[in-house]
Each structure stands twice: as C-alpha cells, then as structure tokens.
Length: 183
Image (cartoon, rainbow, N blue to C red; front, side):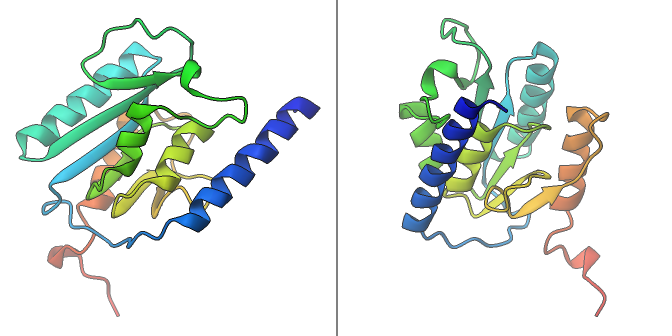
C-alpha cells in the first residue's frame, strides 16, 4: 500500500469512527418472515452479479417484502441505466468516503434487514452498512466489526449465489421457533 493510500485510509477510518460515535441505533434480531423492508447493497459492476441480485430481490418482493437496492459500479460512468439506484467512483471523495443524495437516503432508511451481497473487501459498501439505520445488518465476513451484526464466512472461491444461500439459511433461523438453540 502506498503512503498516499495509507493517508487516505487513515482519514477514512477517522471519518467513519467520528460518524459512528454520533449515532445510536437500536440493533435487534429480526425474524426474516416478519421483516417487511429489506435493503440490499451489492457490486453492480459485473453483469452476472447484477442479474443474481435482481432475481433475489424479485423473489423477496414476491414474498411480500419491500426491497431497495443500491449498487456500486467501480468506474466513473454515471450514464448507465439500471432498474435500481447505484453509485460510482464519482460519489467517493478523496478519503474514500461515499456520499451523495442516493447514498445518504439509503443509509438513513430504517430497514428491518440490510443485506450486503458483495463478497470481497469494499470499504465504501462497508461504510454505508456501518452507518445504516437498519435493525439488522448482514454481510460477508469483514475485519471491520462495525459493518455487520451477522457475518457469513464463505470461501473466496464461492460466488454470490453461495453467499445468497448462506444468508437465507441463517436469516431463516434467527428467532425461529423451529430452530431454538439448545441450552
């Protein structure tokens, strides 16, 4: 990592920690069946990932949930047309902090569950998740403990479809009377 990247990351972490100290959110476990609003963060750069995420969102919509998508496209083009909101590198400042009306609106929405379907390291998506007002935040394993309330550890070789299956598996067991923990 270059010295410039280290400086940027230092300011990113300082900004995130400052924002985290200013918010107080009542996090709680949410039964997936009872969740009404779902937010999904994902990498929209790859077309196959976009298709899988949109299909997953459509399945949830068919089951009666209100779903909001926010994708991240790793370029500066903002002229792409998608059926969901997205942000690009143009909405990321020099400290690597994402900002803008769509990002702030998504981050401030009080979802029952926020799901991150980005398997990899993306600090912009983790930033949004860390500051989300969602009751429950779910995503892939991260070194940043502030990003998620429930982390799913999957091998790097597995794709987004595996991450979706694992998230569904665990969300369907939270507070479910069929899967009570043994005491």
